Amino acid sequence: MINPGTLLQTLAQVIRDNADELTDLDQAIGDGDHGVNMRRGFDAVAEMADELNALDPGSALQKAGMTLVMKVGGASGPLYGSLLMTGGKSLGSDPGVNDMAAALRSGIDAVCRRGKAEPGDKTMLDVLLPVSKTLEACVANGDDPAVTLAAVRQAGSQGLESTRDMLARKGRASFLGERSIGHLDPGARSAQLIIEAVCQALGAKP
Ligand code: ADP
Ligand code: MG
Image (cartoon, rainbow, N blue to C red):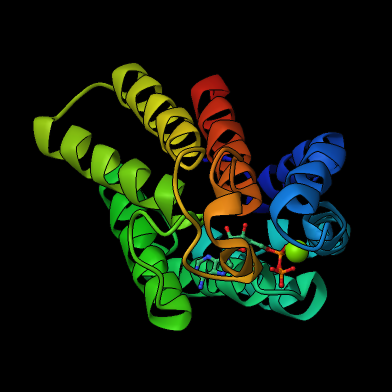
């Protein structure tokens, strides 16, 4: 099992490496703070790595989620916070792939309840939902881990790309109406970066 604090540190590094891109994307259709927001939140989580490594994975995600709510701010902070807090609650202490799929699903349900966005609204959900569906399908098929990880990564990339032609219906980007078309959604990009990094970490597991 990967140490949860170490995994979250890796995610923080990925967010740091891509913060300028997230900010650029948010400058195009929002207020240009998504990179800064996410970096602030994940840096705070990374600082808690030792504490999180002492917890079981589910509890660590819950704790990290609370920190994201407090530190990220904006629309995305409470949404990523809900994802991790609710997902962590159902993840348990020694999760297998079934538990991960169920935890992701319950975390996404919490994001939907909180943000009231639907598929196609040009948000992080346009990455998270196809990823979750793909993971559930792989679990139901009994696919081996390498096949599952590849399918999940592809679902994340395709989901991200699908936001380009969408008209934003939620969050600040929705104020732009038609002018939101033609740009990737910043929250979809951060979600895809996170999915990609988690898959890489799980794939590299000895
Ligand atoms: P803010 O919009 O308050 O400046 P951020 O820039 O940090 O917050 O985050 C913007 C991202 O949050 C969007 O790109 C979108 O993916 C996501 N988002 C905004 N509103 C919602 C919502 N209601 N449901 C799901 N995701 C949302
Ligand atoms: Mg913003």
